[in-house]
Image 1 (cartoon, rainbow, N blue to C red):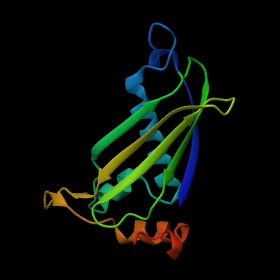
Image 2 (cartoon, rainbow, N blue to C red):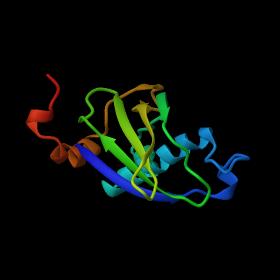
Image 3 (spheres, one colour):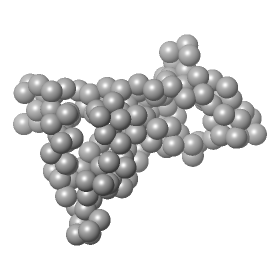
Image 4 (cartoon, rainbow, N blue to C red):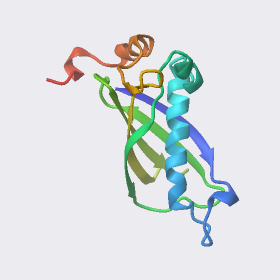
Length: 142
């Protein structure tokens, strides 16, 4: 399993009238977590695009447990629970407050997409090579 964590402070402009992080902004926090997770592997989204692979979102599931509040320091935990095979990659996101309470979790599915061919493709081999050491044979799907 691959895990990455990053922190984001809730900004005033991201909150609703009650001072809660607006529900639609959680997906943006997931995106920050994904981008930083990929960066920790030695890539950026821009580099992947330059290599000929885009990663549009195809599915998003969100669960809300308690609110994130203005000025809270949120820890975004991003996990890849399985080594992607085929054209999809699934990122699991968990958001925690400073007390370590789980606030929210979600699963974002993206597809590897070749913009020139206008069709799905597989994960770039360079990214697969970087991820493979985080997954043992025992973790492999059967």
